[in-house]
Amino acid sequence: MVWDVTDAWTLKGGVTTGYKAPSMGQLHKGISGVSGQGRTNLLGNPDLKPEESVSYEAGVYYDNHAGLNANITGFMTEFSNKIVSYSIDDNTRSYTNSGKARTQGVEFAGTLPLLSEDVTLSLNYTWTQSEQRDGDNKGAPLSYTPEHMVNAKLNWQITEEVTSWLGARYRGKTPRFTQNYSSLSAVQKKVYDEKGEYLKAWTVLDAGMSWKVTDALMLNAAVNNVLNKDYSDVSLYRAGSGTLYAGDYFQTGASTTGYVIPERNYWMSLNYQF
Image (cartoon, rainbow, N blue to C red; front, top):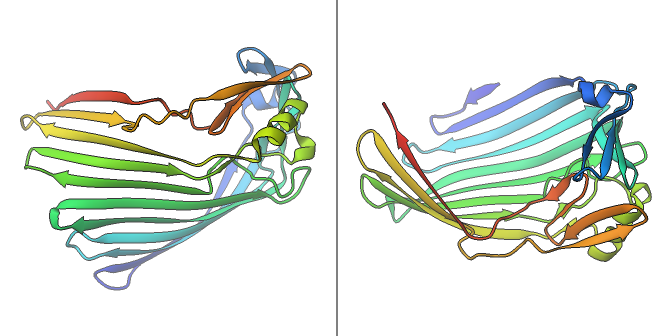
């Protein structure tokens, strides 16, 4: 549903339904794969049910048609029989239906001219909360999504051909696990006890430029992680036969949780339109 209240204001809303059948690997009876560099077996579950969902969304949009625009949207998704993975032991994972679950949040995005129309600030922010509402992991997060995410970008149109930008990425604390403590494996409990329930928040600055060499040729360059922040430190945890590499910002075992952020790196591209 879309309602243009005025030339500047618009209301949007909608309801959608979803249906997701388990994959062949998830339904396979027996080992369907390996992960964690061959240390963890993945078992299928032939009793999995299809995942169903209902999503609700409502938003308000503003555009003054002079460079200033903003929107805010609320969303919520209710899941039934959500398919999730879980640890059977330190070396084995499988899939199950978690029952009922909910993801909800708010998104904001906007663009604001600064000083002149050649300098603009773009910003988007998302708050997300997820929860498993029944089953063995009732109350635990449904996903590894950070509660708060922010992206900001300052753009400067230096000339008609040259544009520069400075960007910032922020990710708030992120759940380490989507299981309650009692459902964790021995090595996961060890990490939880020593490192805590959440991965830490982080911020990274990036910068770049674009040069329109000709009408057909565009040169782009960027420096990612300008301040060369190091978020890569991890330690090896062992408990029984289980192993897990865990740090403040990410951990990896059968799968990787969090963000693996490279040190300062450089990127360049040439685009040519025929």
